Length: 250
Image (cartoon, rainbow, N blue to C red; front, side, top):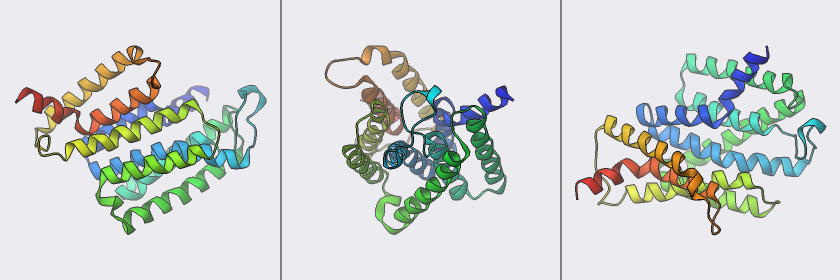
């Protein structure tokens, strides 16, 4: 049972979420998967904000921090739940339903959370998704990726300002800013060029591998290396391939 639970919990981690995002972004629907990753990144901070409101301590063996609602369950429901609603595929929806139940069980089985933490996270996540989808449909945010990620960056900043800062905030803030800058750059005539999909994917993957390899060298006294790392990742995903092609053809 422990092995099964550990496997299911992989679907809450970056090692699974980023490849799923990349596959969907390049090969299925860029608009929906971009909206999903922005929702997930902002959700990391929204979850921390909600935890700060209730201030329910973690179980003693987990150290310091807040338990209610479960942050892992909240962000997982947010990403997978949004995709299930937007893609409207019966088989994928069934898969997501089973996956989320399995992840919730795994969090309880592993003594990370109690039932109320998991259930509350699912409820808050559902509300968060509904509000996000309403916002996308009633404003221009659903049609403009740069504007969407920038507004998410600003809103995240406001939430962070209202609570004690945590180093984990560098990840979503860096990624959201990188996505914003990348989208803006990709709209410039100089970079607004169509390139073969396979070439774009290979260049993107190659660039991401290089960025991760260079991560240890990003440490500096001026800015968080985590912020800089995820800024580069967000930027590269949105415009990196076009940037390289443009430089080669100069």
